[in-house]
Amino acid sequence: MHVLTVLDHPNPASFSSAVARHFMDGATAAGHSVELADLHAEGFDPRWSMADIEPDGHMSALPDVVAEQDRIARADAICLVFPLYWWGMPAMTKGWVDRVWNWGWAYDQLDDPERSLQRPRSGVLLIPAGARSDEIEGEGYLAAMETAWMKGTFGYFGFSPRKLELLCGATGSEKRRQVLLEKSYRAGLDLQPPRQVRQGGKSITVPG
Image 1: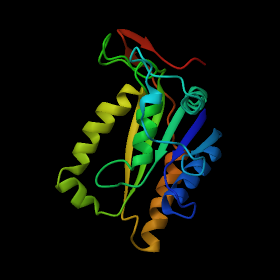
Image 2: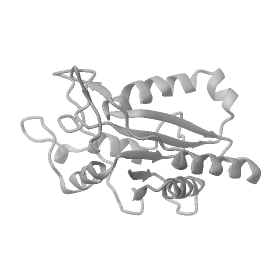
Image 3: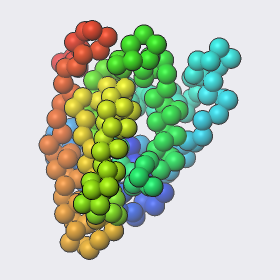
Image 4: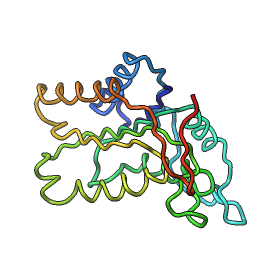
């Protein structure tokens, strides 16, 4: 498979960057080809503006958005790596999602609210988090993320299978961080191929 990793962190020496590298190392060890979209290093503009919207309300085919969509088109699997900010995505990731996975290209809720316009791809979210896992689960934050992202956003993306991996304790001891990096490596090494899903009443899968 060809695996696209999308990284959101301005510091190349950050733990998130290390997570992305370990994931790609695992994917490479499994025989996959890898590609990195380092959103900060590449200067992606996350701002959704009138330039993104045609007069008829459809999304404009801006060069930076098309370039990201071309990357996605090449990928059989996508991994998003970003730190957990205020129990959600940082602005760069959110803007990348809003601008790139736009209506008419990624989904069309008018024809079928359950349907993605994209072919199935394996999807992984690797999210470093400073909070403890018991805090995140006990207060209902994990359930909220599962609902919003895994049942919502990334379902419209056509991610199947899709997996949310919170890397809790990312600001902890070096031993804890090493465990999380090993988990990131395994996520790449054990990455599952896209599976057949139902879209628009039809079963589709990735060719060959």
